[in-house]
Image 1 (cartoon, helix red, strand yellow):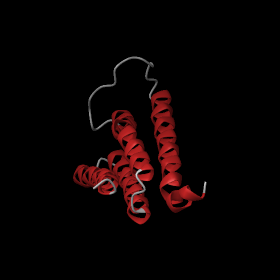
Image 2 (cartoon, helix red, strand yellow):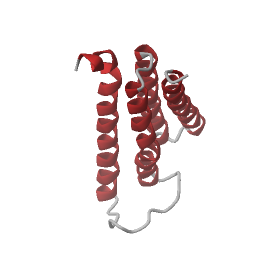
Image 3 (tube, one colour):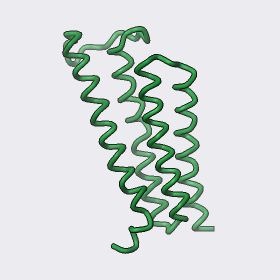
Image 4 (cartoon, rainbow, N blue to C red):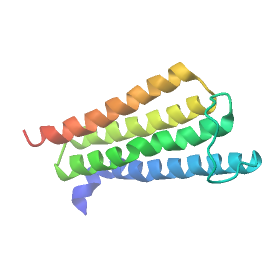
Length: 134
């Protein structure tokens, strides 16, 4: 297990992203309950409604989380530079938290910027991993 010590931050970040998603789904579910939304029925596509935004926050994170986990595992198993892997993983987490807050408060331009940072963090993870093979 000593091998993984260098990647402790990235591994902890995976768990933290899981916690973030848990928080996001609880918020979306609680808002749905408060708004008396019937589960299974579509939510009106309207950025002015918090229920829509809260649901989109979770769904947006869900769209990229599998890529994040795959790229972190790829980088770790490729013995990629631990500092870059850890920083990139933290960059992904930070950008997802920022994206969540911006989406909740409907700050569209900052939300888009946070999304771009999450994409850059994902690419950094992949590039760091692939560099170990070159």
